[in-house]
Image (cartoon, one colour):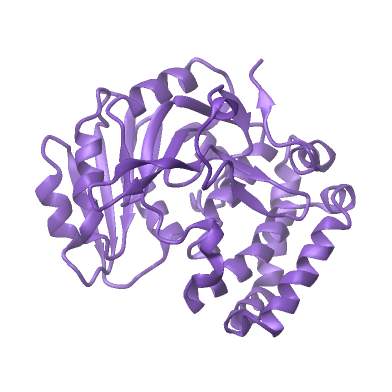
Length: 333
């Protein structure tokens, strides 16, 4: 057995699921089990996946309603048992040696809780690798933003070296199960289900960092990601996407940023908050419900924030080093 399981959460991804499953089936280090959680797709997503699974040990969980990514991901985690778990988007195709390279690099280093390779933008339903970077790991700013490093840029020498990054894009992230168990909420909730979708990978990355788990970027492992909404096109997103994004911005910080972080990163986060509020009141009024939802959830989320702070082994001052201007990655020891 490979010691790796994989899961995919899908909602109406019939067009790309075959390529995603083909990429998994072609791995030189093939996952022992693949769990597909289908969130009430209205197309033939499940048929496309089962038809393309080939030699994979594929298990399908069909939800009768769209529960969101986070809840479906937790369902999938409960159906896996391996020491390492790959979270894979339904529009992401791995190079044949992605898992072999990434697992070898991560497993030999202590306190690696997550790892990611170099993700390129994909072309077409076959998910052929394109000429631009999709993600070279998640990086963060003093405004409380999280960004896919190098997104939309051609790959160059600056992204050819392995480094420590803040987190891994959920498009193709390899997690150590012990790390997921370590940061899970009571009941085994590794992904915060209050997020529904968007920013849940950044939330998980923040919680892992606070517990002393590191995230490895290993560019020799490559994949191609279709990404429906690109970061530079955020304003073109649907009202639902923008609403979740605005709401989850505040949920993310309430669960993870303590007073030390707020002081170290002041006034950047305050200026960004003011900009978000102004946008919601003017050019992006469809996001206003997201603010209302965040306000309703504030007490529960701050309760999680207190619990996370009580368990943290890395202080807010130390965490802030990832966010201060000019700091994005760390060289490997």
